Image (tube, rainbow, N blue to C red; front, side, top):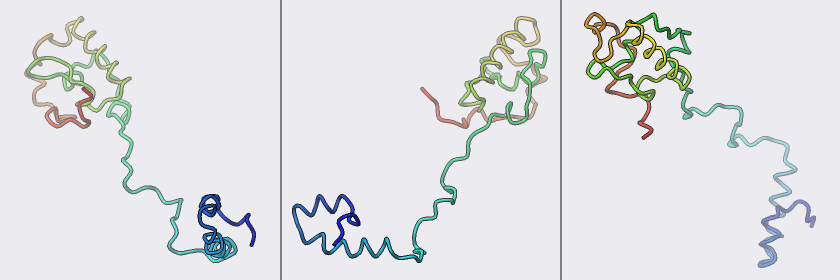
Length: 141
């Protein structure tokens, strides 16, 4: 009987019950010395099918520059009821693009490209980039 082929947890258990060594040492040596592969074993190079795909924001995906001189694009990230900029969990933008959006909206409002409170009527029929009533991520607060 070779003690090097026995797993450590069996050695610890064998102090309490010496009959475990003889029973499990035979199966341990068989599994080490067998050359054929077990067909029921886990294959490690298969990707996880349940893993969520990484989210990419719209501005990064399509390389859209958020510029203060483009009020039509900026108005899609502004609520038509309150005039506030939607949060990033609603817009789906990453942190960097959300900060650029906020500075671009502030600059556009300072220079008069966007109104302070309400969205202009001509921008209300623009195609929606996202649904403000169904956020893409849960609210972080």
